[in-house]
Length: 590
Image 1 (cartoon, rainbow, N blue to C red):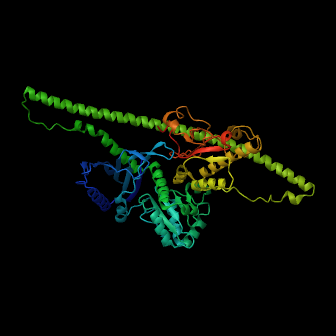
Image 2 (cartoon, one colour):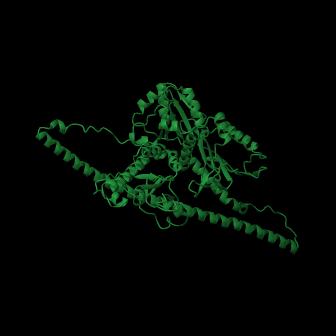
Image 3 (tube, one colour):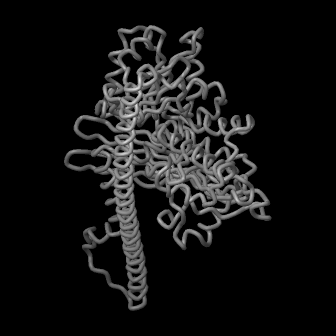
């Protein structure tokens, strides 16, 4: 899994290419390699290898270096083991007058033990390569219309807002744009310093702007359709923003001032950086880089056969003894066996690729079918709700006319006096804090969260989720609480599934489709073990129980968050939510 990716461009001049290669050479020599090759492999004193390859096609040329080295494991108490091996690919491509600079880092895989004693795999934090910041200083690199971050830039006046909006709306940009504004009473310069510190590992990943008070007011006037930035908050704009479309605003996550106030800088850095790394590794690379990647891959796979195309340079006959000829034949046989072994490995690699892409195809088909089913389910529920609203509206109109007929017209059109609205949390951190606050105040007692707080807070690191996932969790918790209260006070004797599936009881049900079980393979073995979560010992003396019922909060590739729960009312008087976090492993991910 990638731990870092940057894709930038510059003018395809010889000067820019030489500057970039010069920066990379200084960095390579600083890692104690004897040289920086353009073909072949060199090794440093620590055993790290640097392999170079190149290609020259009709419309493009490319250079790639692959650095393989061992990293020291992080000083974390929960790390059980590590693969140690890290791989970095640095690619330069010149195509159609543009110079592309592409860096990927695949850090070591860590096996860690979580708070519940379960083992899981994680990737080691990779940071930003030291040469990236140097390159941004020495070469004019761009990401679409934006210049990649070496620090937050001030937007001092309203007249600069138009240029910022052009950058936000640019759909050729790959990285994110952070737009923030200082809290009231804090100078722009001070907020730039704080923002730089919170994003120090973002070089090559994003661009940052700090709005002055005048610029913020102008920006929020222009971005009135839900894209505004509050004082003390920050919005992350992905490419191709449409400030005229209110629905588009959910694609550009807002980090509220309260989140900055309640979180330390380390957590803010992790949220911002992880969200961008995840999004960048899932985007479709520009065509020039996809073509170059194919050329490098083709060259690597054909390398074992290069010798077959070499011309025989022997021109003089040799007079060999039988014994010498036998030795020569044995050497030729050994060489042919080596080539055969390489060819077999290439065939196996091709078969592995076929299997991988077949699995990806099957997964895509299954996801598409799931989306179709959920879309149909949503339409059915929307249609039913629309008909119910229509019936209630006609009933209200009838009652109002009756009140008017008996001389109570004022009452017919009076407000109810209850102007309260649902106060939904806007982030997962706020949600988990709200649960604790309400339960301390004697509210929301019909549901308990027993899982890991960090799993919940980690969902805020995935900016693409938007607030819809938070809203769905909150509606689900309110439904669970209403179910428990109805069982306690109104004599409802059905199960939670009965309560949700039937509205005849008249209770509050704010959620639709619930997956009440998992496949048999998922419930057993290693996959099944992942689904054991903490419960009260009155529910299970071991303090843990397998939960298979879950609510799907989103089907976005990768994170696809889920909330697992169990109807434990009969034992403890409330519903237990054992897990809220990213998608657990299943048969598609293993």
